Image (cartoon, rainbow, N blue to C red; front, side, top):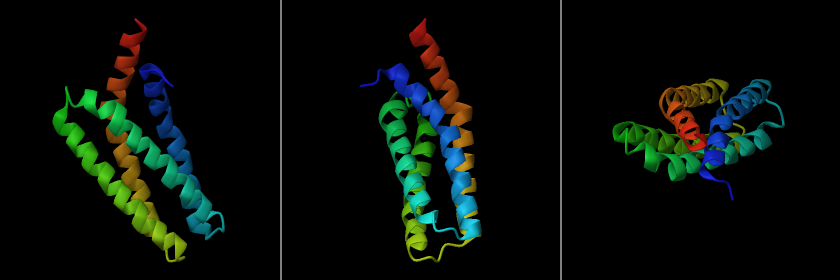
Length: 132
């Protein structure tokens, strides 16, 4: 079991890993590569776990200082989950369009930037205070 500091560190390190995975999905989509399905499955699982961890371990404490922002982030997480399902079906049916995948991944990037600007700064401060 991770202590809270370790969990926060893992979450902070997830965004660059997810970004690399986004790019691999875009590249596979562009090339109509056979690895698109497995890459999408990896993205879906990684992203779903990341969202759940943020909601369970970060949002409750963050809501004490920024409740409106947490509500926005929760709504974005719900949208991401819905879109993962929709696009997963398109990938399974081989009907995914690159522009649709690009738009989704751009939205994920914007969401990540929003989190980086608020939540991840807050996480770094929490980690530093735990180490002090």
